[in-house]
Length: 249
Image (cartoon, rainbow, N blue to C red):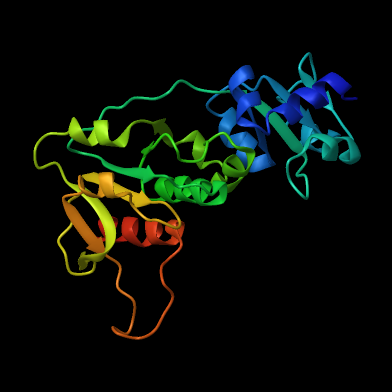
């Protein structure tokens, strides 16, 4: 049985203030929790008996609670709870290191938690293990972001930085890519195996200040050319298309 204090504590993790105060975040669902447990020890597990039966190595002891489905709904951030919710410690800020052998993503003001989580999942799929985020990008530990990553947050390092300072510290000529309406056709432009791919805000795109630091401007063209079409692509979809082209060669 879960206590009122435990319920209050878990619900506090819905806000960035609560997560920052406790230095913890919540993850839900068998897959997301399992992927995170492979890398870090949960502080607390709230799960149905069915989940514990399927995970006999996890003991019901101090910090871990067996709950009914009705009790799980009281703490879940999902419309349909999925057997288990676990509370994990927030990791350190991550490294700001950039080298000339890796491909990175940089997010400039991505606001929607679902988009951020999906982008982290895309990065994981395409072997990008570090994502740099501007300070005004959504919080990676938001429950909606964690859920949208489907466990990929366990394998991708998300680092919040001043993007202008980061780009300013790069070696001269280091490839920084971004998508623009006046860029070169991504399907025709030669792409490097390393560099930073910048993706912008859902409504405004890449900010002017960061855009000035992009030395490779790309365009994802619509088809056929000149046809009336949507104004833009969803940022997560644009990220998937762009990463796919970088990995295609």
